[in-house]
Amino acid sequence: MPGAMRIFFFIFAALILLAQIFPARTAIHRTLICKSLEGHCEAECLTFEVKIGGCRAELTPFCCKNRKKH
Image 1 (cartoon, rainbow, N blue to C red):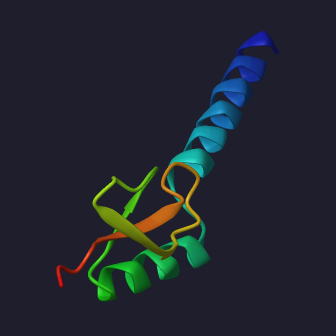
Image 2 (cartoon, helix red, strand yellow):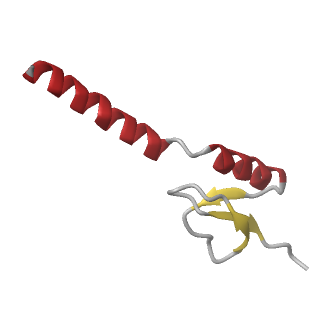
Image 3 (cartoon, helix red, strand yellow):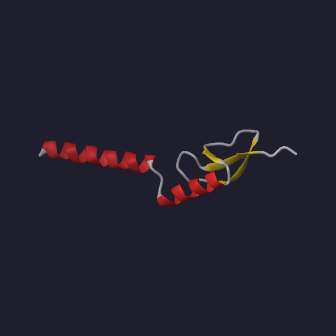
């Protein structure tokens, strides 16, 4: 029985890691919208970038785009 418990623990841990790495379906959709707006998903926008929306992924919440020069 201890071998089965170990295998269950590793499978459970792997599922938790996969859930943290891959975003949900809506996050993938928001990432595609960000790409269509010529932006990119980042944890924080740089000083010369403007925040144009949200990607809603765990590690990359902001959609950033370079500012237009006047």
